[in-house]
Amino acid sequence: MMKTRYTIALAMLAGFGLGTVAVQGLHAQAKAPIYQVTEVEILDTEAYLKDYVPKAGAAIRAAGGKFLALGGKTTAFDGEPPKSRIVIQQWDSIDQIKAYRDSAAFKELLPIRDKLAKFRTYAVEGIAQ
Image (cartoon, rainbow, N blue to C red; front, side, top):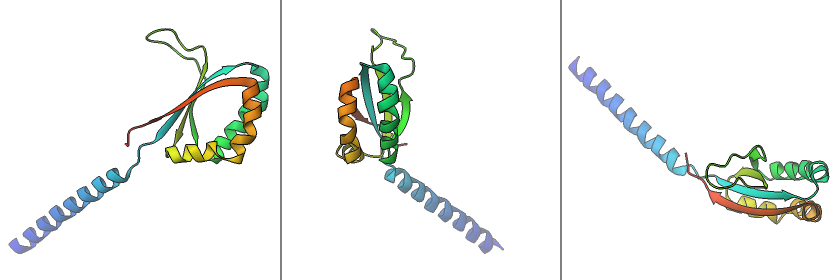
């Protein structure tokens, strides 16, 4: 009877230990997301919203990007709020962003985008969760 209790206790401890190792391994594999931030100074709002936004949005989603913010109200806590529209996207990697920016879909949008707005775009690495 005592051997059974020790066996059960030992099995529980071993299971807990294996579970802990497995969870830590999964966390170690989690990659940090990449956030692309774009400041957009729109030159022609109507044409930008009609001719550029739907096409760009579809191309970005097709390439694996996910929108987190699309130019909503910006509140400044320090300094002046930006006059530009702010767009934040989440990507799996910097290579994924580069692949999108090298794609035919992105290059086809460049003449439209350059005519309708000025862009300042940069990426920042997030924190693995």
